Length: 269
Length: 264
Image 1 (cartoon, chains in turn yellow, orange):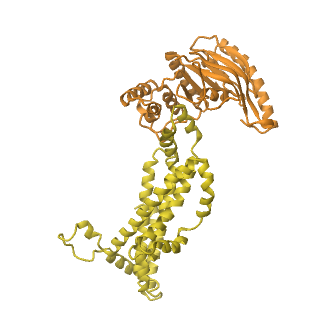
Image 2 (cartoon, chains in turn cyan, green):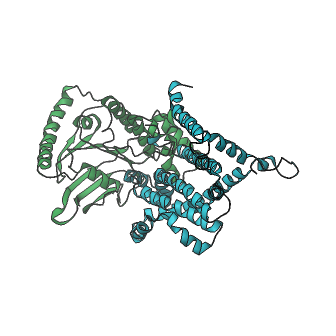
Image 3 (spheres, chains in turn cyan, red):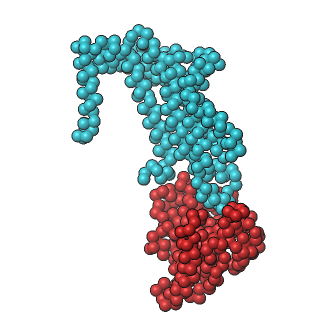
């Protein structure tokens, strides 16, 4: 470990130690702030499968993920991905249409500007009225959280395509479809992907809230449930898992970006 | 296909009414097939406008342009354009850029591959085929842009200050390369530049244009055999003559720029 990276862990380690001491000595009630060691123990316990492994019952992998926390994490991740796919799957084609057609853009842009600032969370009551409880309102909210950032970025991406590429492609004989598929789409892709990265971040926020309200599993549901029993260690452990999951999602998205945009000048220079 | 370019009474006004900016005024010229023509003049003399009109990007306000007997109405691969900004597709590798026009044309895969191989060899790009434009120097990018046009073997090449952004040495290398390519298959080339030396070094014939509205100030044939020596007395005599003509227009441009916001 280099000196500078050692210095980087100094502050977190010191704070953890202080936290541990404060909780252990009773200076702070463990309900308010349980010691980090207790959180770690609880977190580790949540990770374990509930039953011993039985090859006749299930595959090793599904057993490995049968603990409460992995189960919740998989549920949350599944909702994020499904909602994201739904939201982005609608936003990209609509954005491409609005971006390429000035007529459609002027027709829909005002509506878009009115709807866009409404936080997806504000749709919760309406979502429940429309879809009841369970996965449908949750997916609706997540898709909504994804939809607007992806849509707005896709439109901007298409509209900012440098006219020099259009001119060059026309000069080389490209028709409308080739122009769209091989010039406008790739030229807009850095914007589209930036929108997707924001979108999946929003989706991840929304999934936690949606789970607290509409469903009975997932990480958001679990930490709210723990609150009813005043299990602060479980709450903090759940928050930790949420953080890790968020990191994984953003990291995966970032690597996908780097791969798809490996031609892009901004990445290296 | 013949590649004679005929410009007849070409007029272009940007905008309309009193605010209209006259870019081209009554230009008539014929570029014979196989000629290397330079359009020379200061900024705002309409040289790029005329080139864009030949390419089919800019519709004329009046007059006609025909290439090979056919009136120009829209851009097309028979008039390959090389831009100063390269205009390579950054998301495509070098070879995909060069293959683009062939794909559009529907050239069979094997044949396209053979063309790409031949052209990349010809322009010294063989080792860079899988690179992306961002990894190339300006000179290499412009080679790719030229290769992309040559792949389609157009009878006419239109070049809009293609070497304007390059350093002097790279510029000379690419000028020589262009002359070599031109000597091989004698395409008609219309080359826009504001460098007097570049024009004399390259062209069979130079049209010096006036500052706004763009008209043909002088039609000069360069009598020197190639390769031309920019240090020779003959070269410098032409340079002096053209320099005077161009600087008169440059003075008008400077004057206009100091007294009104520039449009070009």
